[in-house]
Image (tube, rainbow, N blue to C red):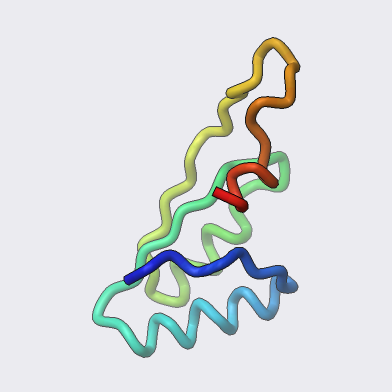
Length: 76
């Protein structure tokens, strides 16, 4: 499957989207970067039958030069 463009959506819309995709597939896998808000999303995704991986954030721009950020990732 070809990667799709970045989409902006609410938390509820994300869960609805994941649930729909999960119904269409034999298996579902997700991954997101851990943050200060805990594992609420992780638990929600697992309740939908998705295997979710929570990854540790990494500072790719330790010198603060703006060479790596979410906008650049999304455009890539």
